[in-house]
Image 1: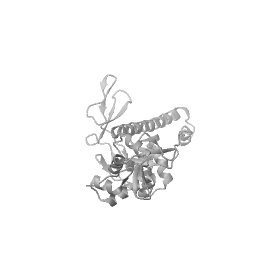
Image 2 (image 1 turned 135 degrees about the vertical axis):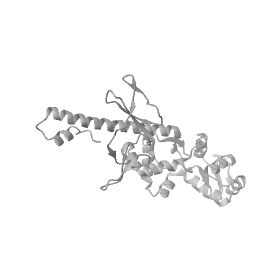
Image 3 (image 1 turned 90 degrees about the vertical axis):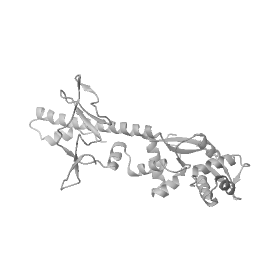
Image 4 (image 1 turned 120 degrees about the vertical axis):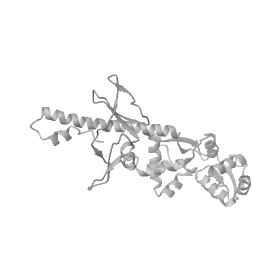
Length: 90
Length: 199
């Protein structure tokens, strides 16, 4: 089964919280999604690049406020995240 | 291609309107110069002078087949890079703008520029999300596909209407010239009449 990055984000939001104390691990996510841990880690790094996940040096991970807000948008389609851009309308 | 094609030895193949095979129809009023382009229906779309418009059947002019990249560039100011980025949004994600740039081989700034251009065109939406460290994160996502279809088709019709108006103006200009300036060179008068209209 192909695990999408979005599925990892959704599971991450279920298993963790933007509160820094509520974290999980890539192993736990892999077990919950019945996926290879390396695949999960790859998606987590992609999510971290989008500022949707935070990976600590001890390996624990959590969803960010940004990640929670993205899921709240309930977008059917997928997205491009541009963290470094200033809105040109501002 | 559904239209009949002819080979031009000096260039790419040209096409002619073929009412029996085209995916579009052209109708005209038998009593005036009203001509309409129709997609997706068989019956005359409207009446003119209280009579159904008639399908055009006797057009002899051939045209160069449009290139989709040129159409997108001319009508929407959207180069191939913009379309590539638009297609990325419809694919897997979430993706960072850096990933998109790396995957497509464009500069990061190019990706950002066209993301915003696509928002201007109504082909993408932009949402702002809060960032943990403060500030906002821009998120670009596709609009509903039905809405995208409508926006691009009507947007193109607007462009095509502007182009058709220019052609009409060109014909009227020639007519006016012949009536009013019989002693001047036609090319000069013709192009002077369009000065200031080029974008």
